[in-house]
Length: 107
Image (cartoon, rainbow, N blue to C red; front, side):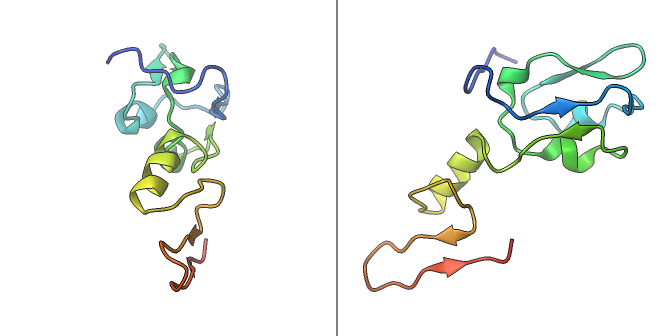
């Protein structure tokens, strides 16, 4: 993996190594190889490569990983593709013209 960095030192990713069982699921699901495995547990090897997609925290069977998914680069890309002008709230779709109604989801 190349050395991707989104924004230096701002990612919300946290790993509680005391809770980690070393199953390796985070290594499997992380698209940017943020994690590495020690002899007993996972460790964060490249925090700045995290795009805050949330795959690691959603797939951790012991809840040792937390990340504010929906606030990073992945959210910005998805919001852009959906035609949203702002990534502050991912629950609303801004109308493209003044006559369209604003839609929302139930998140």
